[in-house]
Image (tube, rainbow, N blue to C red; front, side, top):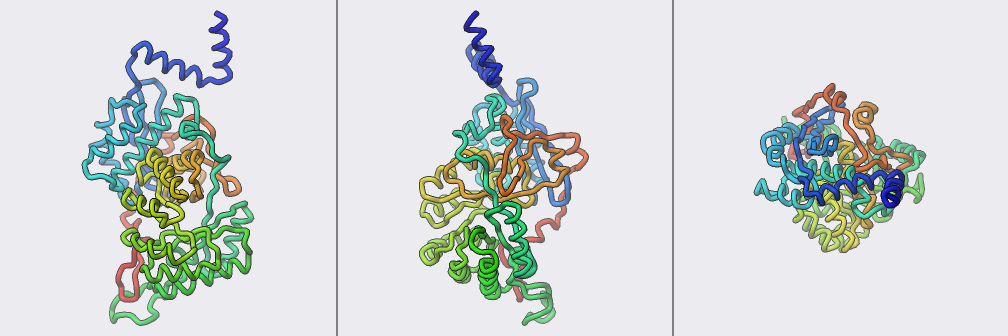
Length: 437
């Protein structure tokens, strides 16, 4: 009796003990393990540009579920169909606790592996299972990954402007809000390298829109960052995204010309198809290099990390298979002195943002994370979404991912996808040819 009172007293201080004891008790009594009873798809577009496909993994324990994101803006309807027709029937009845086993099973089940569509679907289940495991333990997911390695997650902000002066003003405004890391683009991706529509030497009756010129870009961007340094000093840590627009020779020119600006990193200076050139870049420039926004396959990131050819890995957690694989990549980075900088901006969603956050909180190879601000309708729809305060990301501290999803609000914003959504990646040269990405 005395022992029982002691246990109940301890449980009142730490309620998760009750849950843990109940789970252990179920196993001791030989009860059936926790399984996936059903998976609900919640597809929603709470504002233009968001084409979000979420899953709600429902277990055979009443009230216990996990949330995951299969966010792939450019193929959202294909993701939804693949979930409905192929994956959910396979998942039903599987044991919830076997996260690693299910990750490998999903990875091999489609036979052809490491594609972006299969990766985001795999990430959705993986994240949802971690959410469930955290809820059962009564702990945030990062506690299950080893506990806090930092107090919060530093983010970098996105500054921009049409000219040098506007860029300086934008950087200063983010500094005033507490950010120490700020990425700067002049006129969007490739900005500083565009020749206005109709100007310059062009083929007759050919492409007349604004045209990207590599040499112009390589001259303009270093001048921009040196100007920012002259105006704002050295306290701010500066970043820039090339967005894969350059050929290898000009990539090296840019990296070397940026050395006096002491960049925190330059991102995606080459296209994924040209990653072998990093062997030349790394031996000839001191500018820190980040790579990987478009990566989906270990053969892309593994050699760059293992050969110390980059300083930051820039994968999106949802595009590499979720928390389980992100944790493995972070461990690989630790061995070779590379840091993480998960790509979680743009059209990405609060569930993926939190998946990256929980990994960040528990790893020693962390470098920085991209910020992402959501409108009020998203925070209303997804209570517990992470908050940003003076350049740091904070989770809710609740068990699991710490986020919920109001399905009624989601249904008021049905999934929509504009087929022109990928046009923003279309850049052309003076002769009308496409420029990567």
